[in-house]
Each structure stands twice: as C-alpha cells, then as structure tokens.
Length: 208
Image (cartoon, rainbow, N blue to C red):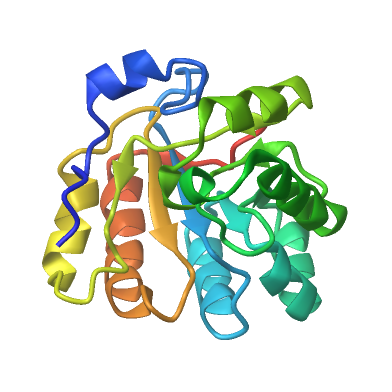
C-alpha cells in the first residue's frame, strides 16, 4: 500500500508553495477533477461519457507517447471542452532522470499536447527541473486529494472514500484513465460526481 496520504499535508504545500495544490476559490462549490496517464483508447472514452452525464469538465494530464498513439482520443477530449496537461512523453520519474533529458522529454510531449499545465509523474521533480519549467511558462500542478485508484489491493469503497471524505471547495483530485486504475476509478468516479453534484458542486478544468 502506498504510504502517501490521500490528502496532501499542509506542510508539504508550504514547502513547495510555488506548485499548484489547490485552486483559489474563484467559484463557489467547485472541484477540479484530474486524470493522469491517458489517453487510453478504452478507458478515456468511458471517462468522457461519464463526465458528460454530469456536465462536468476535468483536466487530463496526458503522456505524450499515448497521445501520439491515440490522437483521436486526445482530440475528443479537447472537443468535449476539457483541459489538457503534460505528463512527460514517457512517464519519467524526475528524481531518477537527468535534467536535460527530463526537460527534452516534456518538450517532446508538448509538440503534441500544446499546454503549459504540467504534472510530474509520481509527483517527483527536482527543484532544478521545476525552476526551468517555470521559467518556460509552465504551471506545475500537484493535488489536494489522491484517490489511489491504481492500487490493486485497495477496496473500491476506500478509493471512493479517499475522495468524498476529504474534498472541498477548490480541491484538485487525482484519478487515472489507465487500465491499472480502471476497476477502482470506474467505481468511484460516478459516485463522486453524483455525491458532489447533489450538494450543488460544479466540476471545472484547470487553466494556466
């Protein structure tokens, strides 16, 4: 089981205050759903259809290699009015990748994705890598709540509770549109949308 808490600790947000963890309360009762690791030809269309049922917008942090393989899925995501973010071309871990290779990999993805929103895979990025990206105009997006949908030994109900027990106005929530996460995500997402919609919340995509 992953030892990262579902809710991002306040002291971590304070240390890395130049990253986005939550969104300012520009709109009342607004939550920001995000999906990492797509586009996926089977899972992403399901997510798009589910979001559409609730008139919800989200942000998809895409792996460049997947976007290259499945351009139609990427285009459908854009056409549906969702925001697109960069998640590197090859899902690189910043801590284990030299800075030049890491930045070049992000730029290779951005030829396809054309976005200034960036989320580091695994949430791991060095200060040097981050500073270069920020100088290039990127906004580095982390999260308020992580669902742990990819954890094979996590019960579906626990994935759901990770979100509904912690989310509030301005929360940035992480799901994954991937095969690995599909079981938990497909259980939790409709229930999250239904739960917060009934409480009067809206769902928006992130913008730079």
